[in-house]
Length: 354
Image (cartoon, rainbow, N blue to C red; front, side, top):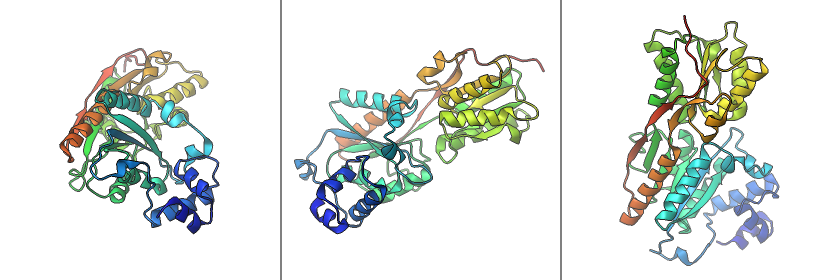
């Protein structure tokens, strides 16, 4: 099977097939879906180079950024939106550090994005074409990760970041997770120790491990300190700046305004700051805010944001090192690593008297 035969099956030109494979944005969505369907059904993998020769090593690692929205549309391709990789406070530092660490070990890096379940074949394709020796999955929800494992099968060396480790999947990959529970618990306890009792939360995407664990840890910290959870103080975000803005607006409409809010990442905190300013309120005099990730921007916000520090570069370096370790051994060496957290105090929280 080759691209010419795929083109014939679909009824398009060979160049159209090539443009779909390479994610060109000018392909009609209906055509894109037909081509991808034909590729999947016929198990077609483009012949990228002579590296397909059995046993030939490519000295290349893959980074697969998964950003599948509920509507399953390849939104960033269609909209030509590059913010996912280049302006994202989560993906960008991870990718940069991963590339740097791989380069130090004389490995190249291929970065690819997955915007819908239909594009999961790209991960398997990269392995089957011998374009990469190992790859890391970042941004995936647990159910999407299960699909990825089904699609790529076994015998490939992969690492996964921010994924729930289970008995079923623990031997299928290298896992690098953040200490989300400790970080969120300590953030909440930090606010409690400052005297706050009316505490809100803007969650992350609770379909992802980091989002769900941070929320559960927040609730547990309140429970252990005898504080009742107020449903009016909960806003469900998705780690984007806009969801932080909308979430804070919702919380500030409560009949009794909270004195502090835990925002589950710094990107959402930017939106939360904007909402607070529009309401004519001041941080921290009227409301204290603590974030999570300690992204580079947090120190430049006004006032500088207190945040839970978790080293995404450390997670990236671990991912690269452990992948290379398995590649050199010529077999997957499953491991689970946890990147720890600490609170970085700045000026966005204040002590109150009860």
